Each structure stands twice: as C-alpha cells, then as structure tokens.
Length: 474
Ligand code: ADP
Ligand code: MG
Image (cartoon, rainbow, N blue to C red; front, side, top):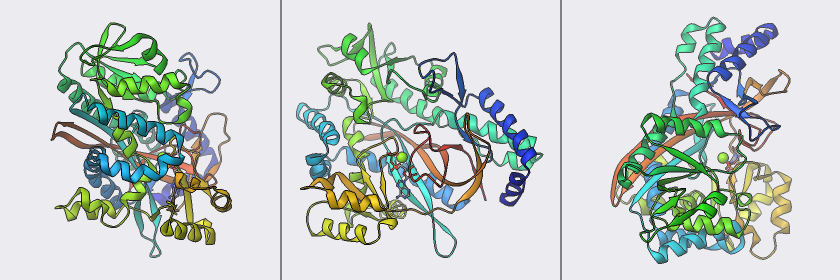
C-alpha cells in the first residue's frame, strides 16, 4: 500500500483532484478550525490542517502503544497521589521555574487543606515517535504525556472519514476499509460522565474551562456533544467568568450562574500566558479547593511535567510504583527514550558535558506545553553555557528520536500543494476514574496521528506546524 500511495503522489493531476475531495470531506465531517482572521467567530471557518494520505505505521508498535496506555493511566494516578515523590522530583525545578512553582504552591495549599473530593478523573494522551533502529525496525519511544487539555480527541474521528473517502475516490476501496475507526471524544465523554455520576447530583453540570480566544473550539465541541448524547450538560467559562460569577458554598460546592459544577474540564491553564494576572491564579486555586471533580487536579497536572518524565526514567523509580508488577514496569520502560537530569551536581554536570559534545543527538526541554518551546542543536550549547546559578534545572535533556521520514501532502489553508518530507507522532488517549482507592474505569479510548514537515523540529497542530493524519497499519 505504501508503494501505491507513493505512486499516486507523483500524479499531480490526481493529487490536485484528491485534495479538493479531501478538503470538502473535511468540511463535511467536521474537521474544522476557526481562522486566524476570525478566531472568535463560527461565521467563517475552515478545515483543520491534515495530510492528503494516511501514513503507514507498523502494526506491532501501534498495538504496543495502545496496550501500554492503561498502565500509563495507573502510573499517572499513582504519582498524583504520591506527595513526597512529587515534592522530591520537582524540588530543583520549582526553585527556578516560576510557572511550575506557582502550580506547585497551589498543590501544597491543597495538601495542607486536604482534598475535598475523593473522585479523580484523568484524561491524558501519551505521545510517541517511532525511533528508527539500525536494523531498520522501529521502536516506540514516548515524547511526553499530556495530563491537561490533551486535544484532538474530537477531530480525530472526522479525519477517519476523510481518508476513507480519499482512498475510495482514488479507487482503493479495500485500503479505505483498513483505516481504523477512532472516536476518542466518545471515550473521554464516557469517563467525564462516570465522574459526574459519582459526584452524585443530577442537576450539576460539567464546566469546560476555556480561553476567550479558541481556534480549536470544534475539537472541544466534539467532547461536549458526546456528553450531550449522554444527557450531560456542559457550560463553557473562562477564568474571568469563574472569578466574577463563581463561588464556593460552605461545603465547597462550586457554583456559577446559579448552577452547581460537578466536573471542571480544563482546556486552558497549561501555559503561563493563560494566566493573565494574579486573579487568574486565585481562580485556579478556588477551582482546586472546590468539591468539583477537577480534570486534572493540580497534582495530576504536575505529574505531566517533563521533569517527572525524566525522574521516572531513573533506575528503580518505576518499581516504586509497581513493586509487584515487573511486567508493567517492563512495558512502560520499553517506551522510554534516554532522559537526563540537569540538577546541580555531578550527574547534571555529566549531562551538560554530554550535550555540549554532541548537541545534535539531544533535545533540551523546558517545563512547558503547547509546542514550540524545545531547544535544538547549537542553541542547546548556548543555553547551557549561559545558564546562571541553577537555571539549567528548569530543563531536562532527552535523546532526539529519529523517525523514518515519509512523503505526504500537507493540506493547509492558503498553502501551496507540494509534497513534503514528513515525520509523524502517534498519540494514545487514556481515560480513568478513581473513587477513593477503587479504579472504576481505566481505558485506552483512541488514538491520534499528527504529521509535520521534517523541516520543523517542534510544534503541534495548534501551533500551526503539525497536521491531522491517520495510521495505515502494515
Ligand atoms: P509540548 O508539551 O510543547 O507539546 P513535546 O515534548 O511534545 O512538548 O515536544 C514538542 C514537539 O517537539 C513534539 O511534538 C516533537 O515534534 C518534538 N520533540 C519533542 N521531543 C522530542 C524528541 N525527544 N525527539 C524528537 N522530537 C522531539
Ligand atoms: Mg507535545
């Protein structure tokens, strides 16, 4: 199949025709994004960027990624409950990184007051690239795990229909049937619904915490609509709305505009710029203190930092969380790339020396989300050499994953139709609900394939670099 797709790509008339079909299919199947010109309007919308063809992915590594997801769910949940581990692992970073430090302060405050809700709802997405090994095989290596605002669980469903359609138009009916069905939003909504049920109020609503400008709104709306199918009502509010119209009652119930909130689903609040002032930080604290189920709660948010990812890769750490499950440890560890501390001390010094010697082999990563923050190549040397005091501890160093490039057309509004050399990143969505000590739901609920031109080292779909895609298993 890969060869046939490759051949089709050379036929420019066919590609032009297929791309028109593809764009219309994207519009008809809700693969949508608001435009830069009208980021707050649904009057003028366009398709979210996507690949013309699906990308071949080896079946074995794809299944490996799906299978490890429920273990990752448990790991994230366990870490979020291990206050001592979080404190120890994050101590060096919070000293120099203001954003992580502010999140950590809220976490400490909640620990002091005691958590006011025993139900935990986790929706995450673990991202991977396939590292090309010397023998030509590929190894599944985790890029990061997103524990807050993991996106594209909604638009992933529509892109399935788009690629099926494109392959059918191209006369490849059998191949079109090989594209896997995928609707992560339904699974995410099921977990939210379960949490809401355990909250125990029929009238209470789900609050989606959003920014006031959201081009990726349709992805969020997919989750809201899946919830509505389950007769669960959502409201969208910003930090500002919650500040001005929200409150906690004596039982710490979260109330806004006369409604009680059962679940707060954050689709905002994961980068410093989303906290415009102290008031927004105060609002985050209020939400965390509330009896509402937070997705994620502050501890789970912190569990998604790159620093935690690096500490987990140290010998013996996974065993602390799964003392009697060597199989689980092995499955999770198999997905780790090389991760290195930059803490002050001999081990961190060794990391610096290693990076300076061969910067092309690594990625330097700060505690940030949303794409476009990582540092590559000579810039790594510059940052490490110029870091003052313990500034380097705001980063971790990671082996650079080198996937096999593949060719594709990236369909993006106002972009010329040219073939690009591409790299893909596979994400797997996890959803879990815990009540007290009992896991009442723990599932893998779907996947996401994003593809970008290999000229870009970094950046996601929202950052305007990667585009939506589907795996074509072989
Ligand atoms: P963010 O939280 O900003 O999404 P990521 O860790 O996902 O941070 O990095 C952003 C992008 O940078 C990834 O989508 C990937 O394209 C690239 N990237 C990150 N880590 C690596 C790595 N170890 N090797 C190769 N590319 C990487
Ligand atoms: Mg990422």
